[in-house]
Image (cartoon, rainbow, N blue to C red; front, side, top):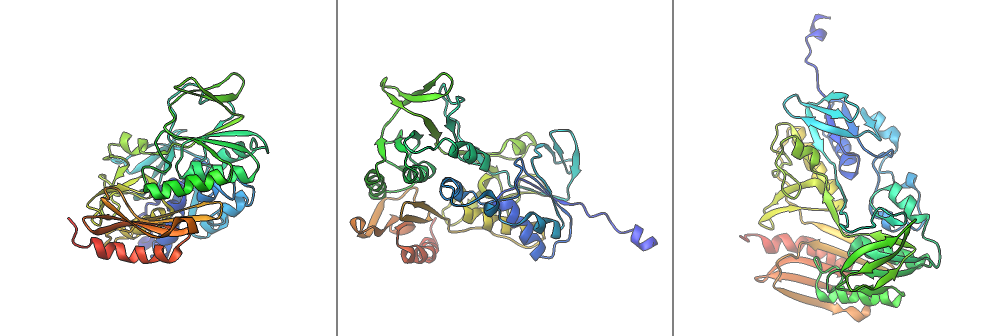
Length: 398
């Protein structure tokens, strides 16, 4: 009895966020033999779920919210992980090793994982709060959006990035009239080469999607609901539904308010540690040093959410960790699968392998002769080879 009472109290691992990284952290912690209780806090009513299908299969009604779940709710209970869903953390108190909910309740932690993810970037113009204007980030967003995607309705998509184009593709299969407004001179301009941009624009046009590039937007018009998007030229693009898909912002506010270092995400080291003791970060919100690319990066991808959560779990369990991945991403549009390995930013040359007219090809991005990244269109073998070739090519890069 006396020895039992002298046992030290093991403080729980607290996870703020309930997405892909949070779910993986629970799995990995238990696989590593971590026995501390786990508390997970999420601001949605759902256990952790997959987000990529939101703009594709879930939007199209081909899968359900239940099937998006990464694990059944019972799994977390079996693992000794208590889910506090629909419960937002309002503050972190690093000195006290505690988090505080919006209703003022405090929970102590021994180690804390920030997996707060990101939110849609707002469009700074009048009219974005009108009914009929949507974002795609959470199940509740898509439920509201999908209810308005009626055959024949006019959908205006603001943003020609992955989410915008994936949604445009799905909306065309649902029978909507679709116009995409993109502020840049080509689609996906920040992340792919002109040949990839041209390929996707042509593929969407064949499906009936219309594009307005170099579009400058002044306002979303309407009274009771959105009726159109007004451009700087004065032209109004009629709309029954509007999707704003202009990227996202990392949810760093909790970390910043707690005094943690923040720079395009929560700043972490190669072991996912933040600037505060016993606080780690993983997933879309974490900015980490990449030796491979010689700079600090933040990745918005399933690959990073999973792999960085594994690294964070190992670090929290006391194992040595050095996280330095080859990033990879994908996008499904119609019958086209785009797979991206690496980061092409700063390339000075491209190499085309195959014929875009065939529908299966790849583009290499190089800098100083070294392979930075490869975009593969319906070419899975090229993608897999690239994931091995990139680190070998970049080895020894400054």
